[in-house]
Length: 192
Image (tube, rainbow, N blue to C red; front, side, top):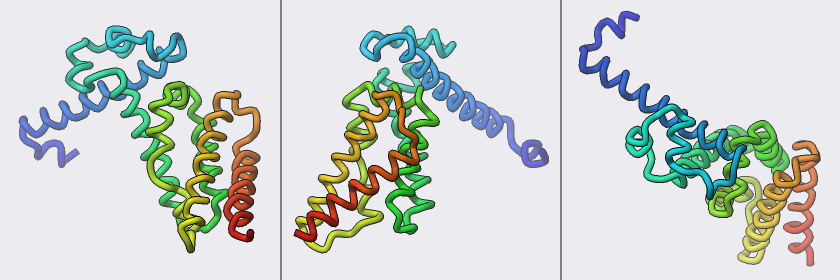
């Protein structure tokens, strides 16, 4: 409290404006998530998002350029959350733990994920970034490295299809299945 008392009027306004902008951005992202439950992404308009968020179109455009930018911000937020999980478990050497983190995050955030997984562009951006398997498995040769990329492509497709199929299997079962599959592809191919 003493820190707040020592701030100038301008510093308080700046702090207030930053908090207001953050709340506005979060409201817009939440509005997109809620609207996506009602209609397809292509049918959602900026006016729909602004109205649902309780902000003006001007406020929308001072935070985002398009609805695609809102979806990208949502994807970025999810990616940051996943990266924080991965960073905390990076050196465990257990790919299953990393996969469990992915499946659990998806299962616990279905509304947020629905926005992303129902847009092919968003799926590519979210699942197309870093090579997470690199944190767990290192290839000795170029073909081993290609095996890692092939495994990642398979895992990304499995993740999306699991989500679109209603996530009937548990995150634990999916993590184990994908871990076993990864081992079969990478280790199995290297043995031949």
